[in-house]
Image (cartoon, rainbow, N blue to C red; front, side):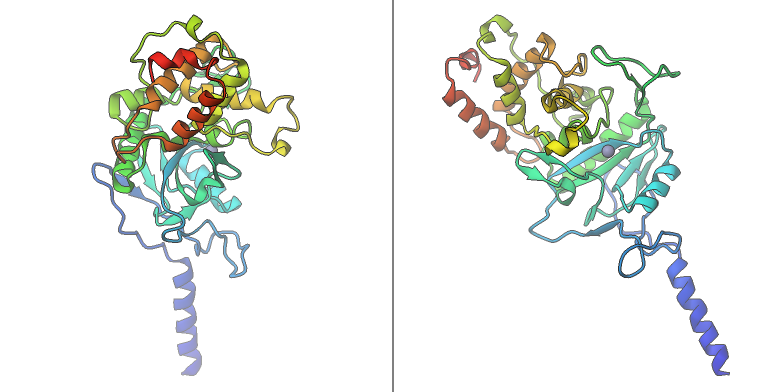
Amino acid sequence: MKWYFSLISCLFAAQALCMKPYVPLFSLDGVNLTYDHLDNSQCTAPRSDSQGFQVMYRLREDNKEEILGIVVHYTAGSTVQGAIDSFRKNGVSAHFMIDEGGETYFHVDPKYIAFHAGASHFAEMSSLNKNFLGIEHVSLGFKEEEYPGGIQVPGDNRYWFPYPEEQIKASAMLINGLQKKYHIAGYNILGHADIAPGRKSDPGPLFPYKKLFNEFGVGYFFTETHPINLENFAQLTDEDHINIIKSIGYTPLDDKFYKNDKSKIHHLIQAYQMHFAPECISGKLENCTKRAIIQHVIDLYNYVDQYTGEQHKYFRNTFDQLREKNPGQFQGFSEFI
Ligand SMILES: [Zn+2]
């Protein structure tokens, strides 16, 4: 009879490995989640770590790795299943994914760190996975050639794809729920391009950050409360404008990421434009970008976030230092802040 019992226990062990992972007790007010949990021990996953399984996320260390923000991504052509397959193949992950119809998939509990950001920096933070949740959006991303449904944005040759209304609504509900649950400041809702300028372009210039803020109170976008005359800011040099973009948090990656390109500053400006000046994403400091930067400063300087009750300390301190160093060049701001 002995062989019989060992066969049974073997079958149970095999089944335990291949079993569908448990559905975690995670919910968000106002959000319908489709549970599709990524499990480190799925028997179908490629085996690569010392235990023999693909590592796709790890436990967050309390106190050291608290949730500060969210990074939004697009899947660059993959469907939900295609993106999950690529997660498994590459040992990466995102906490949530939203398809074009607005269905919201739960993949990784936010108590775990998912691997979605890669090499990244923002406002003195590096390797943002440990503090930022990841949300994927099913989207074609961009095409280099003309493609049905793709549209161009001034200053750029690529064809980008608009996000369907249902998908954006679902994104707003999800981000809103997460901001409330984890007290995430709106200015820490960032795109992958914001934190990896030049290395990443997602979620692209058609991701409607402004609409999300104005219609759903999600994230942050500056409000043009004061009409400005660009001539009053004519003393600002290009370097000043770039330093302001940096004071908002934008940080170039290490030089190795720009080896095929002449100017990492071009990428920094373009990342800023894709989020805050999406009507002109040339990577150059044209008037439309300068106007956005100035309006942004005037609004953000005194902005109090509704979820945290806090101001953007990093921006205020860095901007004050710039202003103190060159008061003449920054004098245009004095009547507003
Ligand atoms: Zn991404």
